[in-house]
Image (cartoon, rainbow, N blue to C red):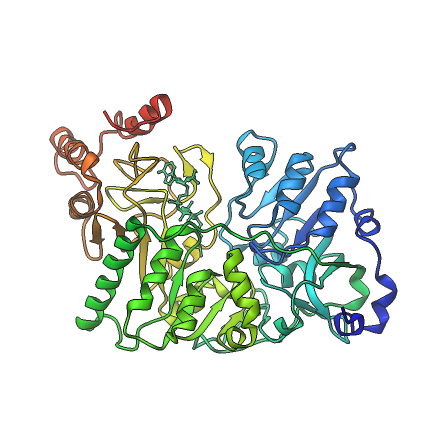
Length: 498
Ligand code: COA
């Protein structure tokens, strides 16, 4: 490791200390804001904090970009260190702590979080703990595999702990584009008119006097496990690609295509992988996460430019990325989540959003976050940042879950994340429902007919027809005493079927 290359600022060389010493700076009741968006979170310092306080049970508020590794969410949850957690997580111990009430979780639109911190709505950030590739001559921070909320944590925190990760290649430098908007009444238009526009600086600006500690580590990111592309996701992808090509033929999408956003998880990755079959060689992605399928598209020469806030690759994907970092770097820009998910930019660019649902109801409302209406899965993430502002907003989901015991098309969603007003297209392996220009009753017919699994189609139609019989053809027919019967039956028996 070349120490001078990693820490170029002479003024802070005397701040280098062990993770244990840095952990001692964190005190009960503090709010810490960390880097991390699947990748790029600090590791050695959080583990040292969890170890130091495991018998003292102090409480901290933990704010991150989004998902962080087990060294942070898992270790903190197991030691009972977290009071409040914002804005997104997928760790099983953190999820359990949220669902058993020991952690207060605020599920927040990812683009809202940095401005709400600057506005003071979420309290003061005591410490920013940021994973870095290097620190520049002036004390500025070069992030690693994600940007997330780090610029705002650094600009608003009282003090900063930098964890320099020497397992991250120095070649990451230059991949980031950091821009923090001013707050109203001084906010200006964000000057992105093309996915490839760079509008900021390649480092997180940081006053070197704020840096309280620099810790060296070489711990690797925990990678995402993606399941292989199966028949269901292949069918979903085929329906979607067919739909988008028809849109071009009808003149409702430009021949040059529009930038794509693709959400998190297995389904989203598989859907994007299907774009490899498209004849276009100049696709642009204006997305939040960059999953493995994007590397496939770059390798197949299908990509002009990709903008996101995080590289969220599987182990295999990471190996590929590191092996060809300079090639991928040319195509990828990593931005703060406030910019990657910015409604103003998403609407200006005309992004086509593709996100995944847990369940969709017959009128097109979508639940992305809650299992059976009560238990938190991961969070809304950036799905609504994109959905509400997209040129075409698409939700993809298998039509059933848990060996067909659960229908993902239900009479009424048990929790609403995306309303019928925001959702334009629903697609399952059964087919695609284009809801644009349809009234609620037309939408119901289309969703049941095209998207529901055969095991549930008749029951959904029966529910819909009895709703009309009971109330007449009102705007949105529903049987309120029956709308959640499928969910309660599933809670009692593990099965939604009658
Ligand atoms: N009821 C109960 N469980 C359900 C379900 C339902 N209706 N639908 C899906 N599930 C379960 C699956 O069985 C699976 O469980 P397992 O982990 O025990 O196997 C799990 O939820 C994940 O489902 P999967 O089909 O593998 O989808 P995914 O990995 O694509 O994740 C979401 C789907 C909705 C959970 C995920 O996309 C998400 O968190 N979205 C919200 C945030 C977001 O969209 N961010 C993108 C912004 S850029």
